[in-house]
Image 1 (cartoon, rainbow, N blue to C red):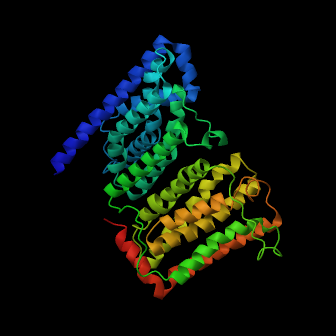
Image 2: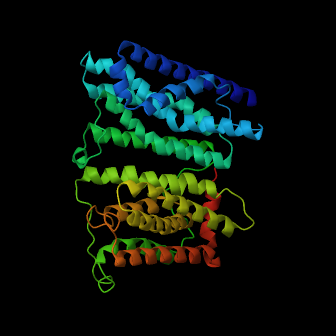
Image 3: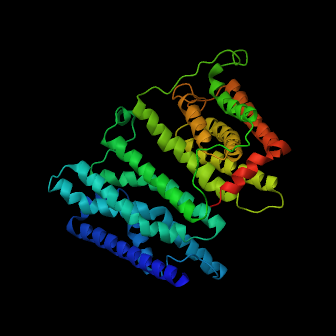
Length: 413
């Protein structure tokens, strides 16, 4: 079996290096034929360097597909860095090369662009299979696995930007989500591909896939309480403590069904699969002296990472709003991770996340879309404290341990 696996890895490595070679040839040929136009497609000097260096590194690095195991510390760090760079950027580079190859069919042969765009997407998706096996599935370290899967999940959505070379609308404005058109359909397909490959990698790492069935030992009274705490966030628009108990002015994000589905798929499902599945389930595998401590640290770390994730919103909102959103996300992440661990499914977390994003944070009334008021700051901080507090009570209670044990037994294949 080991010989067969080694031969398979060798074949995949050859295929990967062949892909890198073809990408270099396509880039070089395009620059020779039409230097200025190709340079315009790159967009910036940084993009030129990335697209040129990543395939060259893939070609020149010996045994690039083998994880950094049993190497001296410095060599191990260098090897892991190289593998991480390729893991993060190779999908971007591969799709750029394919789109550049197909560009003459659109600009010179004047073939309808959408069939070419779909063909480019399918070829790119298929071309990522050797890369997934070499740089993700082959990885053995627990921490490096989490770093690598995050790099893949974070950067892969940018492959849609490369399809813009062929005329794909990459401007995610409200207008393109009014109806289900070719743009929204391809966006959904790209995220579904991301979710499927994420599940495949996790499965190969020894984790079961997310399931619909709730643990049989769940106490629905406690589950209802945790759900109610998440829904409390929806009432941050009450305006004052005087109105908080009877002023329920919840407003859905305005827009058509297609827009709702886009938010659910590209934000809620996407974030939950990262933090309540890919990260959280791996963190639950780290051994501790007590199962409760093991579960607590997994919940805490995943929720802190979820809060840190929202720091990227600083470019679209005020510093105060971003800090408040980060703290709120930590509380939300804490209770959503607890719910996932208690019930054995991430789908309740996805539904609650969708409700808070669609009803609790419309573009105009959200506490994070403008400078938060004193009430909004107090309310969101109190909600986070309550979420963490109830999660700890649920996690530490002896009578509720059976449900947590069911989940711990099921996350492994």
